[in-house]
Image 1: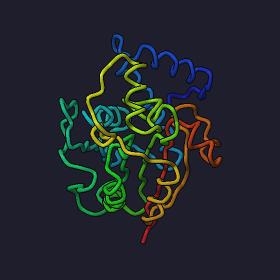
Image 2: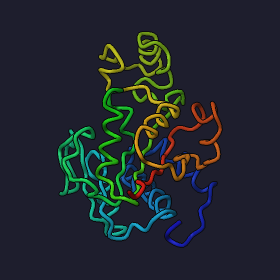
Image 3: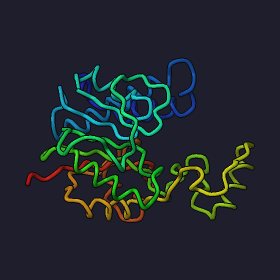
Image 4: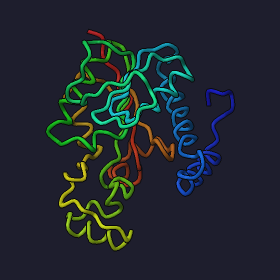
Length: 245
């Protein structure tokens, strides 16, 4: 990793296990965000340096990721979210991915991590086109999705989300002991997105795919295996470059 130590998959799995069961204890949630931000930095710096870069985090919630990028690499970071809540980053803009209020070619790096599955199908393509528009030529767009058929992808309904909604809701309520008030996936802001759909969305833009990575298990080769990538990879990252005109 960028602190000079070699990456250890075993150590990484230990951290995943620990954070999965203890992330809401003490300061662990913040530590988990910092750890994954450092993995992200390593991932992006395989393709371009981040120091001082103009970055946009689309759907970045409170702006915690921007704060980390600024602290680690001095990025001129902007957070964008339609409902940011209690922000921790001053440069936060209230707006949607479908209507990004910046000019063309404004950012060196645009990120959209675990957001597209909360955007209606009809707005996913326009959102990706907006990200293309505000990325500078030669810049990077980094998008993460949870493939729909992975058991981890269903948020409030997981691991039953791929079933018809009424059945998924009943099973999840029985499993968790908590009532789900929503009457559809749309009411939960949850929309089906697969690797195949994501690739169709990317092909509708002039973005070029530089790499696909397995965000959690770091078994990147799995993202290139048909069928298995849709089921076994909890989150796939797409590292995209805006081709120079």
